[in-house]
Length: 440
Ligand code: UD1
Image (cartoon, rainbow, N blue to C red; front, side, top):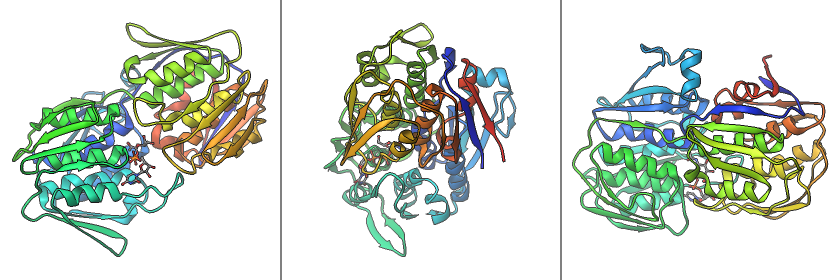
């Protein structure tokens, strides 16, 4: 299993191209199931989760081709310069003109929870879908009850059997008013896709406002859907009979950008995040600003400049967008371990999302967890250690800690990292980090 070896203490200076957002790409790929015509997605990041979604869609019968940055249809391995220019992404063409199977099998769904995003499009267009339940995962129980309840409200019959959920709507779905009791990104996306092909009007109340949800809605509009209230918590969808071909460029990854912003912050560095839009990251920018790290818009993206002093301790609470994202909580905690003062970090979205804490403590951090809050008391410096990652964002927080630590850090089990970060070690090394991938 691959590891990352990091010799800490290097100040990061330079520029990093930000790729297309993984969390936008996954639902956008699932949206290809809504039409028999071709959907073209640009800036698709090269990540293990994208491969899992590709495998899932291919087994449903979708034809997927990658147009590499080398200009030819191919395996998507683009050449160096061009990959760097767009953050590493590729163009993907998806055509679901011959969907043979409407079952999403356990083997694929258990690898990635976002597989459940095929449910809405399959029921809406094919009248039925059978999707394995995603099961427990490292960051809490994460049920899909909101997805299922919403589909039932659109008229689908939903049955749970043998670890699978089967949803049927042989005569099509019908629009409805759906009030989410809690904000859910995935449920909003699933129902947005399903409602696009339902009869009549659907209103999604207390919908997720994440930029990735808005990106999906914009792509659906390009495919012929009628949607109002994009980017708000009340989305109105007037169903159409069919959707058509479209081309869409994926929104840049605010979580990848936030992670590299914290890499600059934790090393006292100065990095420009190319292709990123500050408007998509107001909450992290405000929090980092309070810690003494300036983020400002530039012509090409965002500049992140750390001050000369250690970051100040800042309290953080995760919230749905536009609040501070849970997907940056572990990284922010890594920064706070070396802050001047203390920081209370409260996780409100997922239970059990503090698995990075014991590993950060092994590097000398001072953190105490009380329920959903962690009290971080800043230390002057961390020390390198062998550490192990347990989920995607936890892994990258250990990489960040390693960049700041004295001595050598080895981050083991980095397959988690490869699910969500494209060429992370190359991007960091280009700014002066001493980091390498060790293959066994
Ligand atoms: C998405 C993101 C993930 C991010 C999360 C929150 C993707 C592929 N993943 O995950 O990176 O951390 O949003 O921003 O986009 N819940 C229920 N019932 C449901 C659905 C959700 O109780 O049916 C709960 C979850 O357990 C969690 C909360 O709602 O506590 C929010 O989850 P949700 O927004 O649905 O997260 P995902 O869409 O799975």
